Amino acid sequence: MIAISTLSPTSITKESTGNMSKKVIWITGASSGIGEASAYKFVSEGYQVILSARNKEALERVKTSSSNPENCKVLPLDLMDQVSFPVKTAEAIAAFGHIDMVLHNGGISQRSLIKDTPMEVDRKLMEVNFFGTVGLTKAILPHFIQRKSGQFGVISSLVGKFGSPYRSSYAAAKHALHGFFESLRLEHFEENIAVTMICPGFIKTDVSKNALTADGTPLNEMDKAQENGMSAEECAKEIFKALEKKKEEVYIGGKETFGIYLKRFVPTIFTKILRKSEVR
Ligand SMILES: NC(=O)c1ccc[n+]([C@@H]2O[C@H](COP(=O)([O-])OP(=O)(O)OC[C@H]3O[C@@H](n4cnc5c(N)ncnc54)[C@H](O)[C@@H]3O)[C@@H](O)[C@H]2O)c1
Image (cartoon, rainbow, N blue to C red; front, side, top):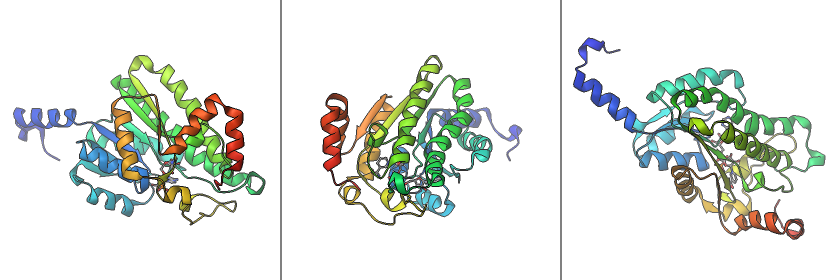
C-alpha cells in the first residue's frame, strides 16, 4: 500500500482522472463465446473490464489474450452461488473503483423435451439464467443508485421473445428476464439507470454443446444452426453498439431474427412455421 504522503498532488489527480475517464464494464460468462468476444471488444474500445465466470484459468486466458491485460480483472463467480454475490460485487467495484455497466451474459441453454425433463433440470436453468442474473442485479443496484448512473446489458435470446421446442425452461427464463428488466427500467429511470435487452439468434459458440439435456448433463454436440451462425466477434460488435447507444432492445443474428416480426404481426403463421422447422 502507498502512504498518502508519498503521492504528490499531481500524481493523485492524474491517477484519479485516468480512472474516472475510463468506463468500467463487468461481464459474466466471460470465459467463452459471446462473453469472451465482448470482453475483447470492450477492452479494445478502452474500457476496463471485470471478467467473471466459474473457471479462473479460462478467465486468465481471456485476460492475457486481450489487447490490454492491464485493463482486465479476473473475478471468478458462480451464478448458482447467490450467497457470494454481495462479496463478489464489492470486489468488482473495488477492482477499478466503480462500475458503469454490467453485461449479464452468463447462461446455459437446454436441449430436452418437457415430458422428459425432471424439475431439478428446470430449476437449474431458472437458477442460472434468471435468479443468478436477478441476484447479481440486486447486489450492484445500490452502487448504480448511489452514482445516479448505470447500465445493464442483458443477454436474452430470440427465445426470450417466443417459445421453441427443446428449450422450454431456457425460453421461460429468458422471457422472465424481459419482465424483470422492463420493470427495473421503469423503476430506476430517474436515477439514470438504463437497460438494454439483447436477443441473439444463432451465434457460433459452444452454447449447444454446453446445453443441458434431460439428465442434466451437457449435450456435447454442436447444433447446425450455431455452426452456421454469426460469429461471436460480429455479435460482440453489435452488443457494443447497442450498449453505447443505450438501445432498449436489439435482435442480433441472421435471417432467424425475422421470427421476432412474424411472431409480432402474424403469430399463427409463425407457429405453423416453427412446427415445421428442424430446430432441435
Ligand atoms: N450462441 C447462441 O446462439 C446464443 C443465442 C441466444 C442467446 N445466447 C446467450 O448468450 C449467452 C452466452 O452464451 P454463449 O453462446 O457465449 O455460450 P457459452 O456456453 O460459450 O457461454 C456461456 C457462458 O456462461 C458461463 N456460465 C454458465 N453457467 C454459469 C454459472 N453457473 N456461473 C457463471 N457462469 C456460467 C459459461 O462459463 C460461459 O462463460 C448465454 O446467456 C446464452 O443463453 C446464446
